[in-house]
Length: 508
Image (cartoon, rainbow, N blue to C red; front, side, top):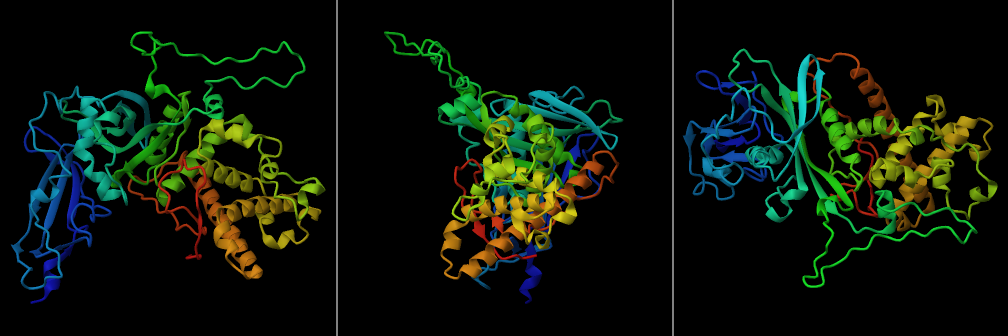
């Protein structure tokens, strides 16, 4: 017996589609079903279905509210326990998916009627490639929103590496979660059915942060300190004090805990595969960011464990957003620095090089972008201000004494980048006894980071063209592999103060 005939890759035999109820039998919307990216969480760690011949898993979701229907088929089953005890044989029945899918239930009234609308409020609507889209937002405490999330949460495990449902089943913190839904609004010949088809979604979580004076000022909950003055009559700020009931000791003032200084973390984020490659991810991310950044009490907007594809999309969106801020547009690289700042025993003046007279931290607080991402975009943007033919190491042999202004700017830019990379990899680099090896590693890291930035800049230019030119609906974007040796794969949270960074070999 050839056991290979009885072992099937669980990703390849798993087919997902969308359906819409019709006048008769409900019809699938997509001509071709799509496969999950990973099934190790849902089916088997090895992503294999053993003991079945020609297994097929069909998981269809209703277009508007993602109510699932599951169909499992196979030609023949073989018990493998007595034949090969090393093979893990899953029980290919609906019970295998019970913990990931909602229990079957009757439809609520008008669940698919023409008057059905997504839960919450419509934040944005737009037309792309002659198709209409809407982006809606609802708190997870909304019953309809929570049901949609329950219906489709298995998609998070099937398409996002390392994803979990952690925190989304805790009733005590449910009010801190929000659900963003991206819908295509499709004109239908059958006017009795809702035209909404889900194209993507995201969740966000609001976490309270300790209100230090800096955070309170950044969120405009405290005024900035007055300028220094010898005038003794300068008024001093006195913070508002809360009062308590003498009997109950409860505060008399009402405090909305959801509007205290917070970080709002973008968590699960997914554009369904049939809708990828059309800049819809950028539209959803931009709408989420715009919704959150205008809330005064939100201090920062981090992203939970972003993937490479998400990073690429986010870099484009963030640089477009930042370039709209007047203070960011005025950023320029220093071309001259005082001699005392360039002494070998002086610390590298990174802020003076990149800020060139502008307070970068104040600008970061205005933008509400986390530290790592903000300074990456600053480095990326400032590299774009140097003419391409001046971005070569061969041109900076004279370093700060170069007669060409752009060559000096490039030298200083590399110096600032080198400082950041060294600071994040100091423990690893300091263990190297050979000074020449340490310098070589650092230079290689800077070269690789610049190479990634160059690719990003090229991609940004392409995306700017895509924004004004039509693209084919079936196109799927494929980002290039990251070449930078800077990595934070071990960190799930961007709002950590000091992020460890590891040096890796260039795999390009």
